[in-house]
Length: 83
Image 1 (cartoon, one colour):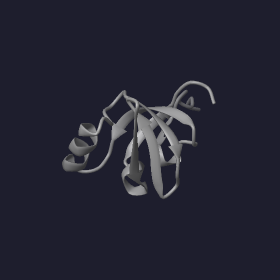
Image 2 (cartoon, helix red, strand yellow; image 1 turned 120 degrees about the vertical axis):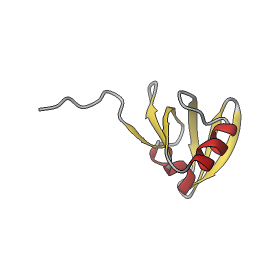
Image 3 (cartoon, rainbow, N blue to C red; image 1 turned 90 degrees about the horizontal axis):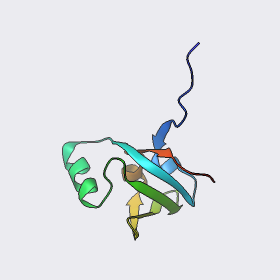
Image 4 (cartoon, rainbow, N blue to C red; image 1 turned 60 degrees about the horizontal axis):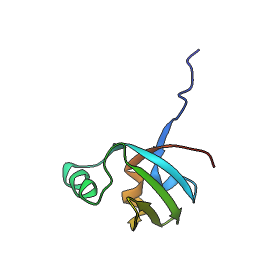
């Protein structure tokens, strides 16, 4: 019997609205990963999902950014804090 991780990682698109997560891993090719890092989505950065299912509106470093569902699916986060 294996223990469940305390904070499992899942795609940013699955983070509930008005919830904060910490970016743990970027998937996709190197061009995508480089571009998304340039936008501020680096590993260990906190991101708050504001709303959305097809287009994901999120806030990172005080700036709101819209991502496609496909892009948000490649950003793995862990939920942090309460809520």
